[in-house]
Length: 255
Image 1 (cartoon, rainbow, N blue to C red):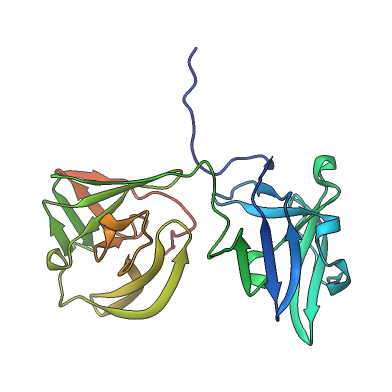
Image 2 (image 1 turned 90 degrees about the vertical axis):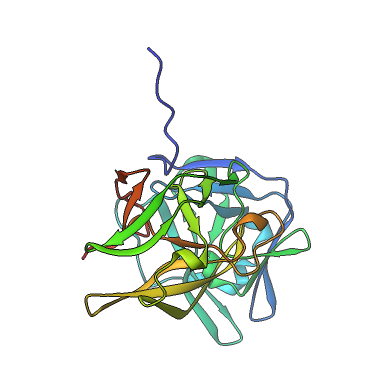
């Protein structure tokens, strides 16, 4: 019997070697400098993190953490990083898995800067199995919430990204301007660039950061410049007259 290939967060701890030169800095100090990192996917996580041979990590900058991991976590021993009085709790850890016994993982947002070769990387490590395709389409897309029309387009751009729901990017003219307003939020994606956000007001309720756009995407994703996408997880999408189910991801929110 053929088996359907599932794409998304796995149920097991997975890893693979990377040939990239990776460095991480905290408080002006290089905490890790490695030419033999591993990419590690923890159970339930879509994006990977880096794990390093212990010899490549400045272990003198780490001390045992006071917090503890959940009993079902693959993580084992935890460390806190401290550099010139700057303290990052649970910034590093090891894994109970024997294949990773001599490696140390570092929490991405615990460090100030990360570099792959000589390029700074933002958000999380790039996944070598990750792909993005942006395709213009003539599908008819409606975005609704609580019965209120937020946007409608007959010329969306569809962004297909490995392991994630389809994102429908719409022109600003297709968005209800009376319901949306700019947010102060900004996030970084290593595949697309720096995102800005819009909040939406529906029935006297402000829904923060419900949509986003990339005013200046990285060179690899120019087709989505200035287009707006709503979280499929938090709105009702009707495409070619057919409702789309709301996917369940880390961006889902309960009411």
